[in-house]
Length: 422
Image (cartoon, rainbow, N blue to C red; front, side, top):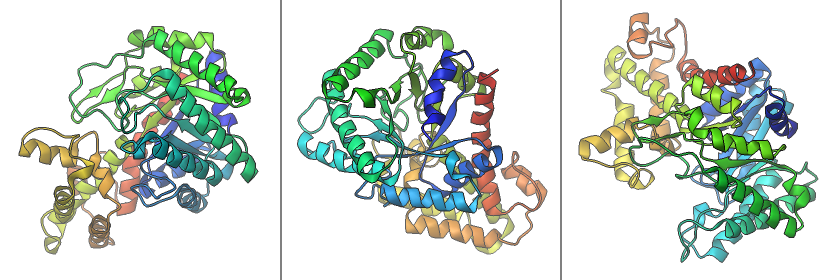
């Protein structure tokens, strides 16, 4: 399993770069689309869960790491995926979900979470200890970050050995701004300074060695840096290779390392291929996939409104608006502006904070109602062309249309990875 990832640095170093899409989502439709595509292409699929989505206490999805693995493996069996092609990753594992607590308490929970992830079979572990906890600065210094990462790495190593599992491969460091997209309009994003990347790598290497984790450090696959890509609520900053050239050159000093690119959602195919070519071969995407899912669902909501008079006027969108207004915790503070602007962002923002609401019972019921209303009905092709022009095809089911919408995004990543190797 780890060879799918560890070979990325060799491929980059030998001038035949290849990449892998990191699917960061706990949504079953997104997972199914990724697994189905891997089953057809016979290529490895990397499915990642984040510390907020999934943790030993349940996360916002209510799933533990073991629950998440069970879900993905059940879907993989249904889709006929060769198990050897399935790679599990844990993203931003550290104190982030508990950063409002004192450091000692937050880090204790982070240790338990890392142990649960590794014991459940997650083989790619991103240790992110960059955030300050209660009473600490928001951003910590490199030595504190590296020391805390080493502490969590020790837990991960012990958990793998205790469970008789292969030892994990690691990703270290983090990107700025925080995961999930920026909360303001961005005109440009500066790549990580080359010297900052060098220092981060050197300090982590020093502290891991001092902690007796030199062998584990040899399995560090990548460091997370900012290559100059990001998305806000309404705009996307595309990758510009010349701006990241000095950062990419740092990899020439480290044979066994690549960089991991976060927030690659909504990048063009050309930009994604350039990222892989330049040494950022792990392309993380999450909100962009659930954005496509929501886009297709809302189109079907419109189709049902036009086709079935008894269905009502966009009831799915009405339910989602009510849920988000009644409980604004998952979008408030991320979206800004007047009431009209906030309403539009709640539903259509690139940041896709609506993804936090799909697993709620009322949302699930509204989606089920939509599926039941359209099940067995022939949707006239002109109506499909009106609302789903890129996916319109006779005879497609609701599930098929939703999967196709997500697969369209994943196809861009697959093509970009192939381009990079030519």
